[in-house]
Length: 98
Image (cartoon, rainbow, N blue to C red; front, side, top):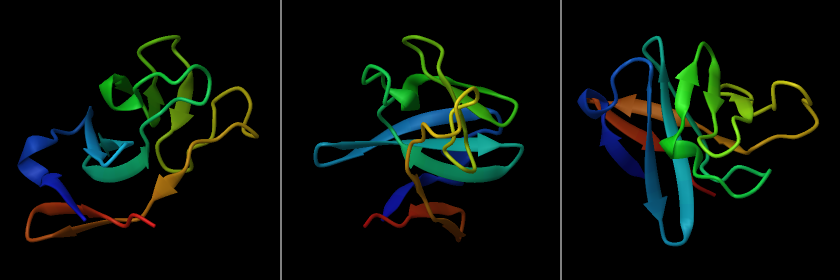
């Protein structure tokens, strides 16, 4: 599924995209693009409206952080958000949605 153009997602930024009722957080960490579930498991915060800190995505509601590559919570790796495969084709960002 095409979610954006690479030019819309500068390095160090995150964007929120929705398909149906599901939200996704698309992150650009130093030029590498990652896709995560866009809902924080803590309290349902919108991860796609958060901020990138190093390799982590920070939830804007309560500052929970998740590794953009693995989806693991920074303090408790047993808590995770789903990650999705990303492809860049002709400067377009595509994610694989199950």
